[in-house]
Length: 254
Image (tube, rainbow, N blue to C red):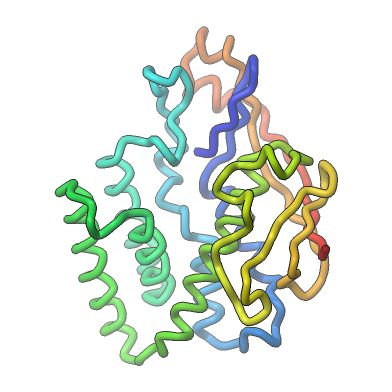
């Protein structure tokens, strides 16, 4: 769950809904910078499905007593989160081994190999073994540069979707989430020095340079959950009783 806290309510966005926005974004990528292929189709699908691990977790949102807010994707209990990650990767693998490899790499990238937590170490080891098995099952060798490009593209579309989901529309650059204030970390042929986002107003985000074929719009579903409803009914009922709304964002060139 993406949790944006306001004075009297929470604005909540389900992780899979955010991932579907990522999947819409990737479809507009400049074609001349990425040849169409069966691998690209599977890589594009991976972008839209990279957070399906969260579907069962977000169906039953949990309350963080310490922070007095719903658990978000950032602070969700680690053991439960890692188990969900692995379940989600397995679901993706049922349709595409290549997409599952990309999702596995994406989830593993959240953790350092130097982390001493044995739970994290086990997760990393199991995912590295999983990717080896998935690659063997594909019965083809994927060039490392192609795999890296698809992986970076997944992470960029994830970041761009988070950029518009985690912040108030039209927010000033200096007030942005620190993750994105200095631009996105990924580099591509079209953007060798990275891509800088900026809200132009409450409905438009400019990207410099612009990595897409043309300007386009995405629609973000969300729910407003009032704190008074949570107090009276609990977070799960308050969440499911809340109306699903939408807001539109258009991506444009600088």
